[in-house]
Image 1 (cartoon, rainbow, N blue to C red):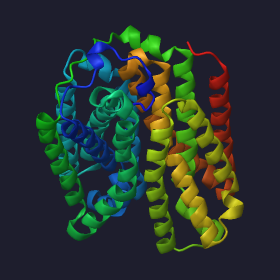
Image 2 (spheres, one colour; image 1 turned 90 degrees about the vertical axis):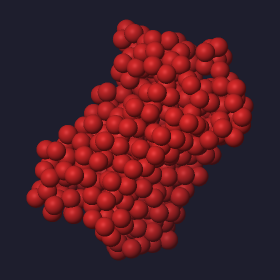
Image 3 (tube, helix red, strand yellow; image 1 turned 45 degrees about the horizontal axis):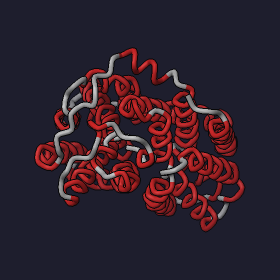
Image 4 (cartoon, rainbow, N blue to C red; image 1 turned 30 degrees about the vertical axis):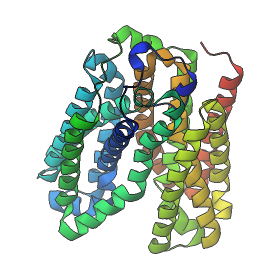
Amino acid sequence: MPSSTSAALPRPASARPPRTHDASRWGAVTLIALAVFIVVAAEMMPVGLLTPIGASLAESEGTIGLSLTITGLVAAVTAPFVPVLTGRIDRRTALVVLMSLVAAANALTAVATSFAVMSGARVLLGVSMGGVWALAASLAPRLATARAVPTATAIIFSGIAVASVIGVPVGTYVGAVAGWPAAFWALAVAAVGVALAMTVVLPRMPAEAPLPLHALWATVRRPAVLGGLAITALLVTAHFAAYTYVRPALESFAGLDASRIASMLLLYGVLGVLGNFVAGLTAARSPMTVVGALSLGIAATLALMPSLATAAAAAAVAMAVWGFLYGGVSVSTQASFAHAAPAQREAASALWVSAFNASIALGAFTGGHAYDEAGPQFLFWATAGIAAVALLTAVLRQVTPSS
């Protein structure tokens, strides 16, 4: 799943960026972005391969779809404990080990002959993915100078957006050409390559200090951190409740066919990458202001979708705006966590990863029930209401002193 706000925050001596050549430093940042890309692509890969995996394992598409829920929930549960369990382990070493586990999880998925084996592989992926996200989200201030932290943060988080744009479509194509296991073998090989490159490119990054379990609890009890958790949960839940069912919704609203919807999803993804960089570079001083603006925009877009997306052109514009706005959510919400707990950056990042992944699962689950029971119009209005609550929470955080 780094902080663009850390540029304005005091930095412990142990967290200073390594004195390396600029090219090496940016190479390290790019490598971490690739790691994030791989874990997100691996998490979402079954989306485009449900039918062939189900046929191969003799399971329904709905059952295979549970593999996403398994991964997300495991990542949500394990991510907060990564800073505790890794203790004094050098962060380069920890990332190499975690990416090796990502490779093993994808290889095990590729050779799975039953849903039970696949579930075990997805549990392993969830553990390693939660670890990669938790560490990656806190490393920009250690790899970049203070002035460059917003850019480094945006690059690292671009891995999420780019994986959403090209990861699943490319995996689906590979699966169609060479069989679904080939897509997971490709991810396994890529993860091994990144792990090996990390041993060469990443500088040594000693753990800043051991994090006892009670310190994690102390971090989560801080009002500013709790507010950030609430906003993240609300925005991500609202988004995935609607986005998971955007195809049937667009079919209902505008009568669009699959090819047009695919084009709109590509447009959505491209604008999401742009939104990630715009938000990352503008949230440095006041991330909560950016979060509030994104919450307002998402709430308005979701509320207007049923009435606006009744023609192809209007639906395309709505999807582009939605993609741009949501593209900034990851980087800006994580930045708000670093602003809320600068002295506990890794713990705060791990809590953010937990909230993010749990909310993906919750959004997909509740969205399905709302869609089945009340239809797409109600679903989009309800999710707009959830995003509006996120806006209200952001406003309250702005006017309430942090502690």
